[in-house]
Length: 71
Image (tube, rainbow, N blue to C red; front, side, top):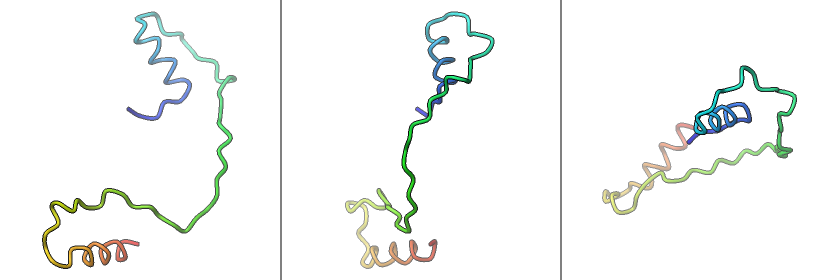
């Protein structure tokens, strides 16, 4: 998967339908969703570790220090 914009989505649909692709796709009908953007100083980190595999003592402190040093 990947992010599909309107043009690439139309090209994919035509390719899957096994029809001729249009020579050009009108750009005038592009839709841009109105997504509000706000700035934040927070970062959400997920899937940084698996508790089943972390057996060494102090692994959580080491992970915390690594994240702090990268920020």
